[in-house]
Image (cartoon, rainbow, N blue to C red; front, side, top):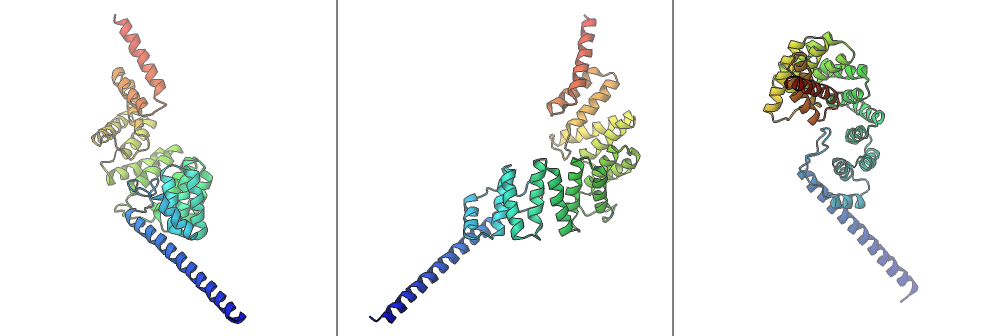
Length: 314
C-alpha cells in the first residue's frame, strides 16, 4: 500500500472516530435532557417562598448531576438541583448553584429570586434585598417581587422602604375587589409597619379593610388586637384576640401569622388587667409553650401572685 493510501486510511479512521465521539456525546446530552424534562413533569416548579418547589417531590439529584455533567449550560438542571439543596436547607451550597443559573441566564428572575431567599435564611439581608431589587428591575409588574422585598426591608427595620413597596401593590390594585390573593396581607403588613412607626390611626383603616376582605383569617384580628392594646382600647383588643384565638383553634393551630403565640400573650396580659390571674396564667403558659420568650416574665409574676394568694388563704 502506498504512503498516500496509508495517510488516507488513517485520516478516514480518525474522522470516523471523531464522528462517533460527537454522536455519543449528543446522545448522552439528549438522554440527560430527556431525564430532566421527565423530572420537570413530576415537580411543580413554583416561586413560592420559602418552599422553592413542591416538598412532596423527591429530587433525583444523581440524574440532575448527570445532566449538568453532560451539559454545563443546562439551566433547568442547575435550577432544580439548587432548589433541592435549598429545600434541604443547604443554603450556602444552593447559592453556588443559583449563581450558575444567573451566569447562564442573567435576565431570568428565578436565580435571583431563590438566591435572595437563601440569603434571607442566612440573615444576609443586604444581599437578599439586592437580589430582590434585581427581580423588581427585571419584572416591575410583578406584585410578588415588591411583596418579597417589602418583607425583607421589614427584617432590617426599614419601615419606610417596606411601606413604599406595599404601596406599589396597593396603588395598582382594585382596593375593594383585589385580584392579588395576598392583598389583605399586604394591607396588614403595611399597617404593621405604620404601627412600628407609631402611626396607629393610619394603620387602623388598613386592618379594618383587611378583615372585611378575609373575615376568617386570625392574622388580621391579631394585628388589630395589638393596635388596640397599644392605644389603650383594651375592650376592643380583648375581643379581637378572642376572635383570633377562636379561628386559630378551629383551624387546629394552623395560621398564616408569623407569631400566633402573641395572641395568648396579649390575652394573658388583658386577663391580668381584669384581675383574672388563673386565666392569665393559662394563656401566658400557652404562649411560652408556643415559643414566646417575652411571655416568660409576666408568667413568672402571675405565678407568684397566685402562689401568694394561696398561702394567704391557708
